Length: 272
Image (cartoon, rainbow, N blue to C red):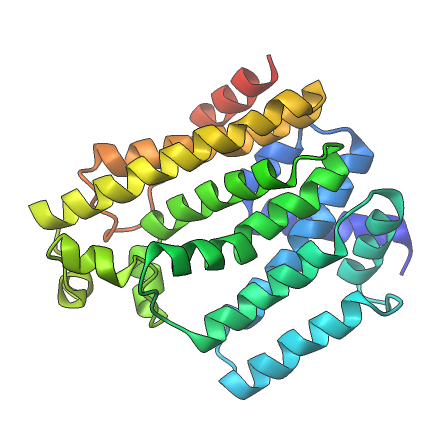
């Protein structure tokens, strides 16, 4: 498979599997857009394995295989060809890509997080690492801010995906915070939007906003189009958080959706 074909495939994956992500990278020049799509396709591969229906033993083998293939010459699969070409063009952190695979391994090992420190470590692997990988493409040397922004977006994901994660047998909300706010896993299973639940989720949202504002300091280190891309990601996630808040934190009846005009306004606002 040729490199152009490989890039076309990872861009197709990005458009079909991550529409919000695709809105962000549309403002990038072609070489950067394709490289970010290659990173996304790799991240999608990790997620698909970790969240798939294969037995845990098979998932473990497949994730460990990703570690090996990151350090080997690419084979004839589109994602690997595109990612290898992107890594040749941009200083994409190999450690960050390996860290993301380790995040998939964490998902195999644990389904509960006793404290925010434990959750933060997980978020740093599955989202902060992606941010660090991407800044090599954007052209900035701010790994801490990139990680912080990635953690912010993942914290919003945790709030948005409570129902979906429960159905996968996972609860990412810290166990000590559930207890402190008087929320049980029976409440989550039943989808109860109680005052205790709203208090817990307001606390999660306030923390996510703090991480988001800290991480957005990254924009000052980026060129205009890269800043517009990252600003779009942040704007879409901020809008999602606002939708969760406006619903009274009822995340049990489907994910909050942003309309196409809303998304386009966020893209335009980030760019102009």
